[in-house]
Image (cartoon, rainbow, N blue to C red; front, side, top):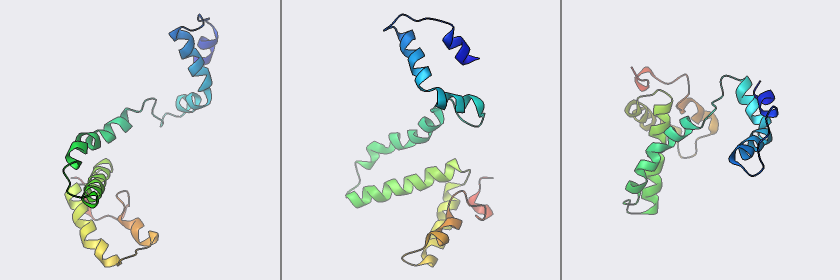
Amino acid sequence: SYWELLDSFEAAEGTALSKAKAYSLNQKQALNAVLLDGRLELTNNLAERTVKPFVMARKNFLFCDTAKGADASALCFSVIETAKRNGLDPFGYLLFLLQELPKLGENPTEEQLVPLLPWAESLPTYCKLK
């Protein structure tokens, strides 16, 4: 096993190898979770790819006229990226939200909002990618 291999060698103190070995041993519980559960990612590549569009758009947010405008742009961007991540057509999903949200009034409850979330199974077909 990985842990037996790790225990089988000595690394000179202060070297990159000894630091890597110490890091692995300090993270044993978390690493075991990843090694034993195939659903978990070993890297954060998915998270990095997910935030890349935000990083790319960051400079564009500088040209918003007001702080409220920047907040609104970031909110729209977040909704669009979350829709994409959940296999939705962003245009269809935004159309759905713009039709349904006004029906909920000024202070919708969490219970009213749950069916509108991008992972809700009850979303109309036109929201989903073909």
